[in-house]
Length: 248
Length: 226
Image (tube, rainbow over all chains, first blue to last red; front, side):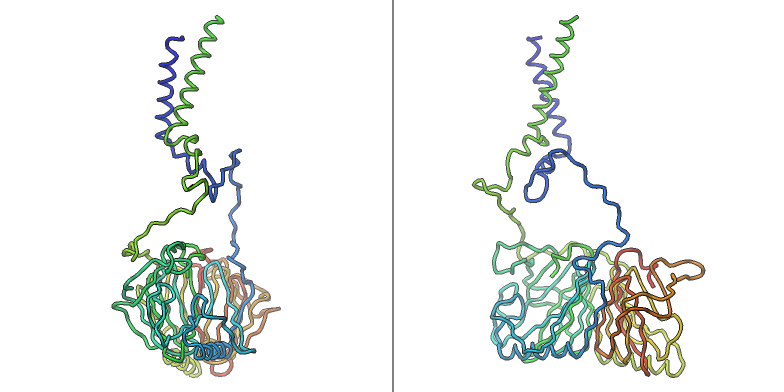
């Protein structure tokens, strides 16, 4: 017995090591949870949640219909464009450049967020003096081109005019980062790209009332006319590749 | 006898200890996995590093979109949009029923997730005019004309849509709505109607033409959507 014990121990250890080598990796499960939190030590099974016939709409399901008057949309554009004319170098995207103050009585746009789509508006400006673009930081009169792999965009121009360049490919393309691309520490957004300019695209002269349906993965670039700026409905439909929190 | 039992027990214990030790030290072993935070530096948990190439490489193959997902952007000018309303208004005034989707290029516009249609409500439309769709949300742009929409509330004497004796789940119809909110509409206005919310459109003289975007709420496929 004593004479054979070390051999048995060694053979058993080899058998255990071999079994562990071919089994599914336990390290992920062992570290469990988000942020390195330990897994449930009791191994409690996941709750058995029955399927929901009508899943809740994310986030803040707007269970009531909404109406937006074209009169209000025009007033919002006019106030926004006037503010930009008075502050021609103020960036229109991503904050910065001082507070946006519109005249008292200017209607406030209230959007809606659904699990499947998101309704909002946006304003873009032509910068008389070249400034660092909103995402890549390259010197330009315009904000950067956008490309969303997981989102369809639908635009309705509500005020101003300019050009939309679509299709083609983005030159100097980068992954978009959650905190802007000028730093290197912020989170990469998979499927979201930016850069400028667009090469080989198609140019449309756009004015108030026009529509554009921009399919997923198609580059698009807003070039507002000087002085006018450009306001538009931005309706984003999530095509189900990644969560709405990533889409921009 | 006792000696044999003890010997068997000892052999089993040695084998079990050996297996446990071997498994614990193996690549899949939980002892090894729990030995530390792989993203730790100076005993502090660090966010994982993302490694990427800038500029980004070419995308993988585009995800196919059903049905007929366009590859390129589609553009509609306000001039064409207004002309579509005028065409439909004149046709209905002359007593000609036409498919509204023929009045504007690239309509209907179908994708896997959403679809765009042109809808025309003639003046003094009667019959079943209240609709409720559990399977999709609607975003509507008024293309021309004036009128009103009652949205929300409940369809009175609601019935499930039936086609050829086949019930269409999630599609409800009726002649009127109780308790809804009324919005006055004109060219350029927008309306958002969440899924499962009743709506009834009424037009003034000249009719009301709308672009209706149906966003599939992913409850059921397009062939059950009306």
